[in-house]
Image (cartoon, rainbow, N blue to C red):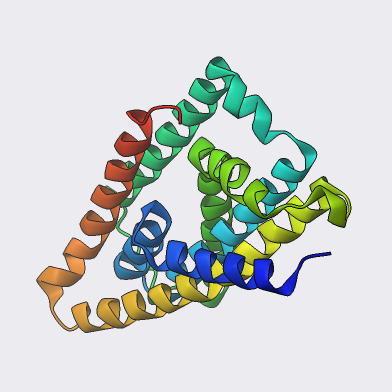
Length: 210
């Protein structure tokens, strides 16, 4: 379906895009520093699921709705910004220690953090527009269904981004463990992560279409 050279160029492009610091990497890093390695890993998995959603949306043409409907774009963007700010405020006032919860609580929190990462990515219209503008450059209509090609390329992007996000989560988790030895810094972890989430929310809120 894809020429080997074109696919190689796509993968290399994805790699360099993914290692460039952006909202997703900042989000994963802030969660892992603020709540530990497990939270960072769960956040990375949630973002990956969100990317899968956008890959499917690009294949089905749903991303065109966001691209050509300013009202829909504004609604989705507002929801995404509100959700990020809401999570940030919750984290600022959270007294829960994610690093040492009970076993049952750990399973619940893991699912919760995955869901949050998924919702953040789904409610990010910039991600949908990225898939819509970047992936079609590597689609060749003579090689089969463009929709299927878009979905496959989206999955390739996901598989490129996930290991990088997981690496960032592990690095952030190492920083979090280091901060645990310093009580004052440990208390600041939630504030750091919460402030970053609010900042990302404000950034999304004031971003423009295109």
